[in-house]
Length: 439
Image (tube, rainbow, N blue to C red; front, top):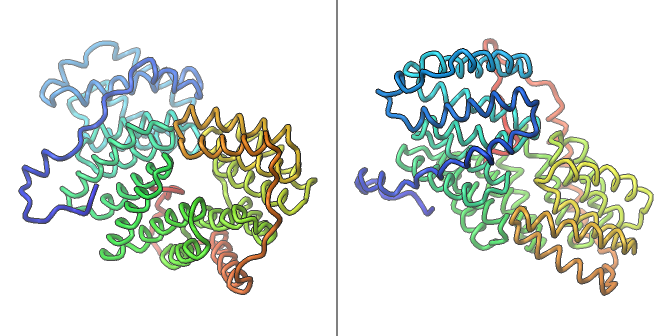
């Protein structure tokens, strides 16, 4: 995905370059992905997915006559599903219409119903379920770049890298065709994050920088903040202090006051300090980030980084208290489990708890290999080698410029306090739901 093609490029040529959606995942794998929900609800979801797929593959004029079997049973199961998930009554009503009158369902309405299930599942950290319905939404409304990008994001979070790549490329192409800069930028940021997950940092930087430029040039400051946040995340892993500070300041400048990713931005900035053995200043930052985050998979990561920081500062009792919670969370949520276990291993290594350090590092390598997280797998293997050779960690360092760090910390604290402040609502205004990450 490069910059948007010139306006003089023929529309027909653009249409030919749009990446097709990936093939369906397969019924058996989908059924296995629904194991995390109540069996009755899971069966209803599975049947819904089958109908949505078949509906999407059928020409509009043939839908009414091809969907005539099993209607009573299907409606009965959807009624049972309402009892298990009352928050999804509206979406399940649309699925009931799909059963009763498939020729009358509009693509956008069916896609929105699938998106509602996707959001419901994501809020409950049911990532495989969320991924299936994000993809279903994209199949139901195949011309919407937002749905393609949603599918890419959920596939990336579920470690379905090839599928994520296809959806992001499709989202980019559809965004360019529609002249939708917001979704074009989302696709660039999402694909950059996919490259980062795969350890291709130079490639990731390229897409984040393109996204940041496009966002600034089109007046989309929020997305510019997201791109600089992701550039910070790379700098925190493999970059310099100066590079990271530049990006964190830009992200703070561009992010809206109440941006939901502010706790993650604080964590990523603090993580840089932990990686550089600047433990003491990182601890209050991480403690604040842990307090503010709500998503359990992110709390897993943030808690593990805090455990590493307190261990580096020599606080064994605090490490063991935080360690127990982080281990429990990592066992429940695999999305950041490999990174969290590496952090716990580093903490145990800093305290010369070699047995624990080896156990955590070995488990991290296994999870990273299973999820195809190449960068984390390599990091875990290197850590295992250091542990086997009993190589300790360098002594604690001081921050390069304590005054600048203190001022930035105060700025973060003020911004994070605003997350707890009651919102002012204009008369007649409606709340819009926001996701912690849109890429």
